[in-house]
Every structure is written in structure tokens, then in C-alpha cells.
Length: 412
Image 1 (cartoon, rainbow, N blue to C red):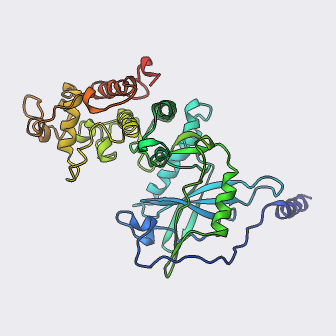
Image 2 (cartoon, rainbow, N blue to C red):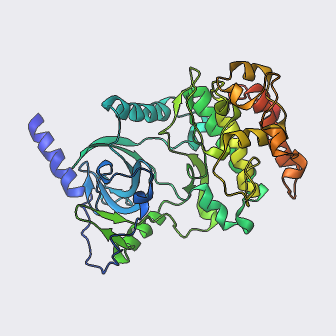
Image 3 (spheres, helix red, strand yellow):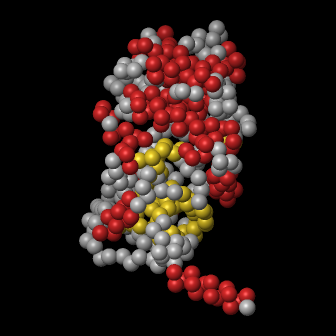
């Protein structure tokens, strides 16, 4: 009887589940083989590290690829149909992130997966969990040069750097930025207080807007089938272009979602290794004073000012094309926020590189910075940026995290 029921169940599943869609023989523009596109432009790119995914390929006997959504230095992301959805229900789309197989050890690969599982399952009822990209499924994918970790998420729309292009001057208006900032803070609160995880890499690429109406994904899949984007054909793979512009109005977008935890670390101990995008780097990271949760808060404050002003508060002048200098970056921070706290200097492993015996900056006099919070930015509403500068000042002197953020900053 058990065998009969099992056989009947499998028969019904095959009859009523979705079938893989068939490809159309649509003309495709082929890109020159010598032109570097998409993940090929990543630093230290090695094609053997990336899985050669193909449109309409079925992954893990469940997810059929319908379009490419994006890529990073260590992964590609694909829109896929969930073939386990019942036929009479709307098509369910997911985003499948295929990780590169360039892990040093199997343990490193498993750590990434365990980390996102931990973040996804720690406390889903916490309000901040809504602003974190959480895992739906995962599987291992054999490739020609090794095995790839695959993670399945709800599809998201455009990153913040693309979102801000919708507005005048390529910056976010304050009435848009304020609620977005509040929601990102809620997400960090969940990461810090519930998961005890430090993101370490907050930037406009890694915060994406969600979709209010997922049905738009049907159009994305159909557009790729009926009018495919140009492709680059190589001997052992095809490099596809990403469909990351869904043609939505602003009202079609939802909440901001923090993504990409590939560089996240355990928050239960002090760390010393180099992290963060250059212009967003926290001072304790630069001078080797040891860092923890506060680096995310610093990072977010600088990112917000960048999004509403078009430049970060500590960016070099646009006319200066010289490579990033940690000495100059730190000097600009000091010129605006004042000297570092004594306890930070005492803990600094690289303090002598930046400060003299009296704790004064070696670089700042030579650079001649005279910046002040008032002259740094010009806004229609000066209150918000000044709150943010106070925010950074508190980070500078008290190393704020979402565990210690004062209540009077809740309105930021």
C-alpha cells in the first residue's frame, strides 16, 4: 500500500507540476570574442572558477534558468522558474546565486552557506529581518572544474546606485533617503543584535530594492526569450548580459534589502583585517585598532551622505585622480571630525604610520585641510546631513553599533 501511494504521488506530481519551457530559435546578436563583458571584467577573473550556466538549463532538477540578473567578483545570479510550482498557480520565480568555486577549502565554502542559513533562520519575526535577503533553498552544483555552492533567494530589483539614477542630479531626495535609511538601520539591527554578524561591505551595489509586484518577472523572462540580449560565445560557455533594468516606475519598487554576505564575519570577537570600500573605510580599520559592529554603522553613515550628496564626505576632490591613499583619507576624517579618541590610538597597531608621539596626525598639516561639516555639503534641508555628521562623530568617539545606538538617533 505504501509503495502504491508513493507511486501515485509521484505520478500526480509529474502530471500537475510545471514542465521546462522550450527555447525559441530567435536571432541573437553575438559579441566579439575579444570583448570582455560581465564577470570577465572582475579582478583576477578565471573562467574555471565560474559555472558555465546556460539559458533554460534546469538546476537541481527544479530551477530552470530564464535570464541573467547580475554578476559579482565571485558569483553570477540568474532568474529561474521553480518547476515544483503547481501548474494552476502563477509562475514562481527565484534568484539563483551560483558561487565561484575558488574557495581555499571545502570548509570555506560551507562557511558561506552556514552563515546565510544562520542569518535567515535566527529570528524571522524580528522587524529587521524583512530588510535582509534570506535564503529559500540551497544545493551543490557539479561543474567542469569543481563544485559550486548555489543559493536561492527571492528576486530583487535594482541596486541603490541604479535607483538613484531615477532622480534629478543622480542623488536621492531627502524624503526618499530618510525612510530608506531607517529601513536599512532596521536590517543592521537584526544582523547585529539577533545574528551577531558584521556585514563589512555595505555599498550601493549590495543594497537592492525589492519588487512590489513579482508578476513583472514574467515579462523579464519573456523579453529574454523573444528578444534576447547580445551574447558572447566561447568554446566551453556563453557569457550572457544581465537584465537588471525591469522598466518599473518608482511606485513599483518596494523596500531596500541588504544582500551579499560573502565578506561578513562573526561579531563575537575583535577583527583586524582590511575591509570595506576605500572611501567608506572606518578609521579603526585604517590604523589597525581592531574593529567590530561599529564599522557597519560608520559605513552606512558615509554611504547615505554619498547617496544624497553625490559624493562621500571624505572623498578626494574630483580633480584629484591619484590612487586611494589611507593617509589622506584619515587626514580628511580628522579635519572634519577632530582627532581620534585616545583609547583608539592606544590600540592602533599602525598608529606610528599616521600619528606622532603626541597623537597628532602626521599628514593633516601637509595636506592643509580646512574642511568643516558646514562647508562640506549643501542641502535644502541641513538638519538631516548634520544629524548624520553627528552620527559619524559618535561612531568616531564611541564606536557605535546597533547594540549601543542612542535612542535619540532613532529618527535618522
